Length: 399
Image (cartoon, rainbow, N blue to C red; front, side, top):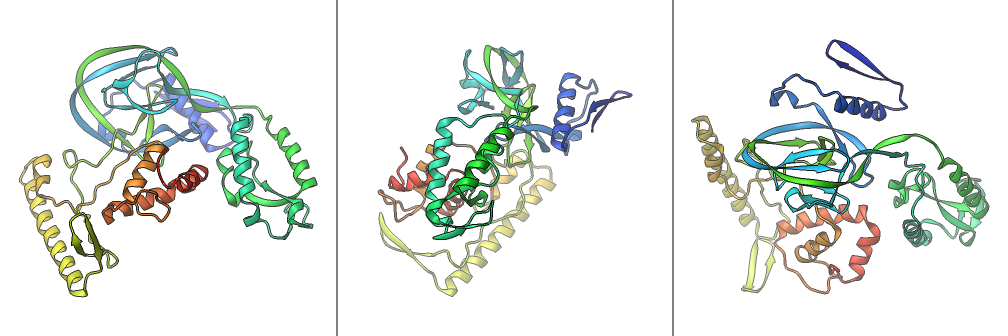
């Protein structure tokens, strides 16, 4: 059940199948009937905003983590054909059908993603090109996931491999996000597979709408004065939110010591970090350090970090501005950030910042940035296995 209170009245919005649908109904009601009560910025923390899954473009909810005053800045006003109006700075990222773009880079006629509705995922037919891609990837898993003799997961009978297909247990038309999840694959004999596929077509005809992001062309862009601006930080995994009906990026990119007190989390290399550089400049290698060298390194770093952070806190306590006090903090202080990129940009980064036996062009990155690259590569390989395989097959060179 969805219910929302406005003023002194409770508004009953109806019954819904799940909590997500009810939350979307409440969010839509509040958009149409905004509150007239002025709220202090501190009060919005831990409240929720609508955000969007950037892969499926379906609506989600995310809690607000922080609101940061960012100073007085020039603003522009974007108006869309659908009547959405967004006032923001030129460097604020806005979601478009082609990905994230700075507001100042947009022109009249460009489309931005705005709040809309669409048939439930089960209603949407999978495009032929995407279905072919899923079929190619699925066939590549046959020899690995089907034994020479295996059991049909539908009828329970044994069959030789050549009489079995890999079946999506949860149909692709029902949940496209599991199309490339090998945990969703199981052997099925040809008769059972054909019968199940026919039944899935019936399942793909359910009615109903869901909240999604849809393209909306810009009809006007004008300068809109200067005023105090604020950065809104929302919880992941989708760092965006709906601003006046337009999908904009989580304002927070890198944790800034100008606006918040930085926490004492510092980097101390582990025992697997090679410490000693050998060879001439441009042609050197790193070798493991001795136990004594590791002990000296660890003690020196910890002592330096503790001293620097104590001086930092001392300045803050005396009233020195954060942007001044942060100057004493060393480069070993961990910083967190949110960033977006397309697959080609990520391939270029990995080609430069990781070492790999399949690379056509050798790279010699610093170990710390390589560790970041390895984490990014593992996540990318999970999300885009076909593109990742093509990247390695091409010698790890971006197209």
